[in-house]
Image 1 (cartoon, one colour):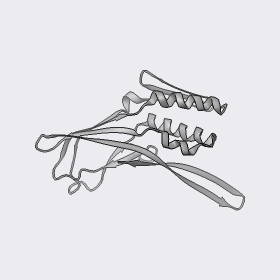
Image 2 (cartoon, one colour):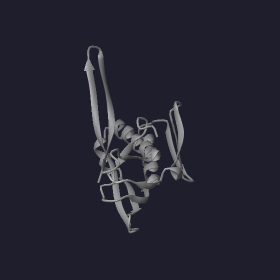
Image 3 (tube, one colour):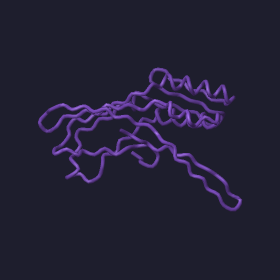
Image 4 (cartoon, rainbow, N blue to C red):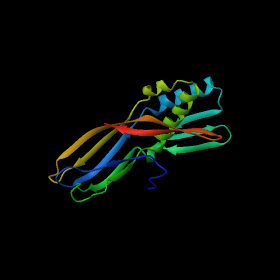
Length: 172
């Protein structure tokens, strides 16, 4: 996985033994958010259309950007095992679903265009369910909530004024 062209979070096993059959499944109300994006595209008179059909998120923005993202291939991650942090110093890199990132990015774009960035708080969290077995074969399940905070970087200099908005993942 290319860590520089995707959004990811680290996963570490802080237990005393290996975690086996590790699975993370993701849930997010895609249909509701797609409807919200399409409504905001109409409000801003932007040539943009998102559709979620048969597990595929497709999008077209102006004449320049179009694509698709397969939620069915992204809504779970499985790992045979995760070693405890005392043995494995580097975290396991868990990629967040691309469909979720595309939707959140579109929402940021439209909320900014409507001058309603405060409404980003209404974007639902990406819900993850982490399940695994410990060395004694006992099953464990944890809930993860991933949301985003905005970080803005503004560059000003001679004849230069630009800005970038970054999505910073937060999780609980």
